[in-house]
Image 1 (spheres, rainbow, N blue to C red):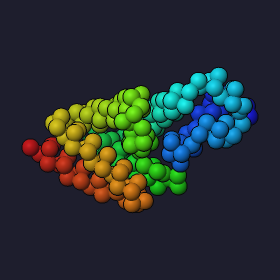
Image 2: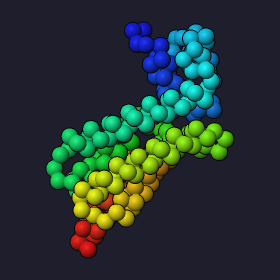
Image 3: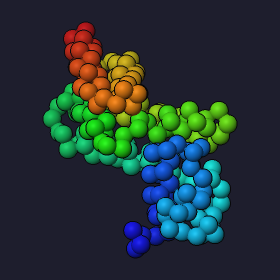
Length: 187
């Protein structure tokens, strides 16, 4: 870690702390300690905690969506299989030992009403995810409304897995998605 640039070290520390403990529970001193930076260096890169929170969420958004898209792309197969692979990826994510649900829902719940930038980043993440599913749904030949339904299934699975600590929510959502797609493609 000592060879990484300071901004990356700070963001790595912030991500672990914010995602694991919650944004409001973590002060800048905790981020400073975890990153091994001085407070001056921390504030040189992120003049305020809101700046750090925004950078954390934006980076997490890009990494999350890139990981999902790479997994789905590696899956190959027909478009329907790629769409259902989203739920396989979710299941792997849910099974990770540090899974605490959606960082964007969590941050929105903590700060969305009082911090417009958090609300905007959370909305952007959800819109991009819905758009990604819409593209996969279109490629599979299903009507556009099906993408809305699949997004709700995925979002529900994320919340259920977080609240219950049970990664099988992804498999259950995948089965519901399969039925939904079969119905949409048959009609």
